[in-house]
Image 1 (cartoon, one colour):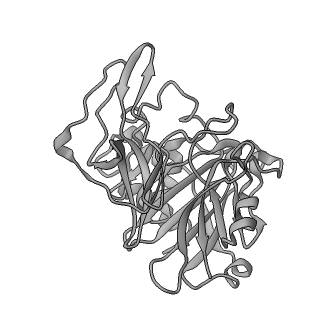
Image 2 (image 1 turned 120 degrees about the vertical axis):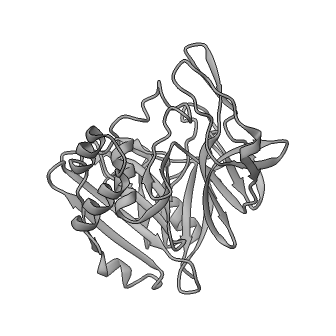
Length: 314
């Protein structure tokens, strides 16, 4: 089942047990009609497919790439810029230098620093290149944090609320139940070791167990611009283990961008059981077979970023 009917049904399922207000919001949310991009898909392995979606009512333009498990698919890696000056490059540059058939921008980074620093967990080949964000301060109140991250391993993909301590990673069953002005504690009984080859931190989480569950407060993203309407990049995992990489254009006449709750509803609509938000805004760029697919912030010019997710189809 694809397109508008599936989006409506899964948005309804996600809101079973929600308040009447939540259901009304879901019914009025994004209603994207998805179509496979045959010309692009012809040059990709059978397990890697690209889809384009539009919603003229809002309006929205979006794309997602599905990467199935198995030999007829692609290998996924976290990519880090090797630029010696500022440690930043465009998504097109990542694609050209690595040969990846699909590249999408990755995690948060400090734009004001040269060279850039990754803001959140970054693991490459089992080595923690940047630790998970340990805490955040809002209005002079400190909150311990376990933020959503995407893990890549030989057995597939995982999304977890992750922390890093002493060179080891922990995955948590849930983030601390923070409320604005009321910090909570991490319950050590709910964590397990997290063994990954690569990992990319982002947040907040968008979908859990196939339902919209945006953990903005729990991951302490309140008090920032992240919950607002923006161009977006997100990653999710379907029930069969397929990786879903989504980009929504924004800040332009043809596509306004989305809030986090709308982004989560789109991820549920394309089949995500788990999903998280990645860096967005001017960073959101998707390149397939060397071609820039979207129109970053309506200007057609890519922002240089520090990290990306690359799919290798060789």
